[in-house]
Length: 631
Image 1: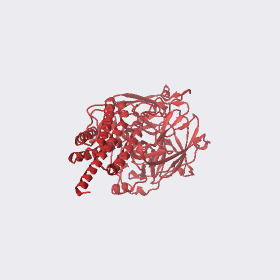
Image 2: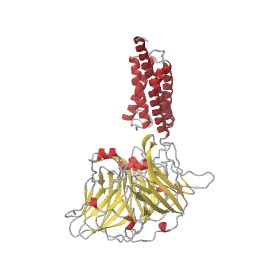
Image 3: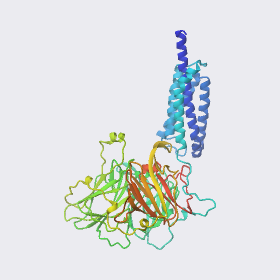
Image 4: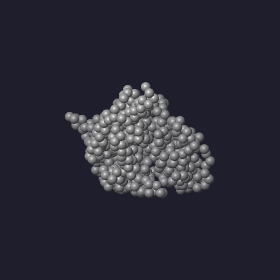
């Protein structure tokens, strides 16, 4: 073969590789467009038709490019692909001028990133064909096929990943407790507070976008945290939610035992309240304690934006000797923790000899590791008188001690002001596992943690970070707890784990309960009156505060060691890395109740299920069709 013929053959082969590779990449993009078309047809008919048309057109042109890779065809397909990429960029930057969310930028997902990458690479190959065109007839097709093999494999792999992400996206509709055909059931919508003659306390919480210290926030009544709702035990509480946000929302009453219909979980106990809509919650505050409220629609996004606040129920016949009663809400992120709107030091008034109660609420979004806040009181002996709103029996007097609070947990601390000097509450930090990359990137960053100073005078000089941790197994005095001492009617193993995977159209670290991620996790089915024991095994290096709505969890033991002191009754039980915790609860509040990790990222990545009572069903559904997204 002459050198001229070899050069011509090489050029034709390389041109064929470019043409076939561009066609394969375009075919992959076409399949992705067709896979997302049904979702867009449901969302907005013109968008769905557009994706169908684009996918079909790309298939036709890709086949034509295989058969006759001409310069004109390459130019037309390159222009078409570049136009699609430009349209995608507009939709993700400033938003399209048409559609159900006109003018609003769309979220970027794995599927559309892959599709655009395929089209960008194909466009580059097509432009090269315009500059250095091929012939209509290609020789040595086996060489062309061999050269195109990497593109074929890459296109097939990326298309498979993109289509898998689409198929593993948010389901159109999921009902966590559907009514069984042929069997009678009670709708959770009927489980409302019965009429009564209790004193009525009415509040209005208006959710709206606001500016706080130059930053945009979503807030109740214009403040973060939202206003403290303080009522008396036995009061009938009525709260009207007015939604002035650009999206739907709800209010969940965290830790409050109330009728199921008032629980405020989108897609489980109600439909989320649409923009400019209103909804009134009503319940009797039967238990005194420290609670809080927050959105349970897109919780992972809405709560950190500011949609939360404290709820305090004081005893009906209050005889406590506290002259000062303060609520402290910690919030923010692992990089910056605020308390009651202050990023550094908050000062509270108290005089020598006065008894002070601090109601500490942890609303901090801890990030992936789930690490709890660990508050320590220094400057005076103190008692932990309540956890998660439940009183402790005969609480011991403690010196400097760190109290671990997972996201959503609360602790009530009581102390007497010393004759001189001030008392200080300091927030320390506990972390779960981090990756080597995180260690490198964030090693130099120390979290900014707040402190609270109570009273006047010299501050105590104590290193709170070295104080011992509170031991819930050996604190206070034993007392009767039927949930712990009774023989359980049902024992349920709960195994917490995680693994890389595709969820909601994204590659992420999927968090699972019993080897499944929501909404595919089997619910815990109970009957009214059951004593239920949960054997929870944490197979991760992270912290998980597991929160059960509408009930109280009694701590049975940790890592096989039983509770020796006061009964510990919480609505959220904190599991440390690779820890085993046993809890029990009385199934005495019928309905359908969420059970999930209260680390927002973990719940959003799948670590959520429900406790379903036999004979009860929900008419509400989660998913894209209803727009109800509780996590």
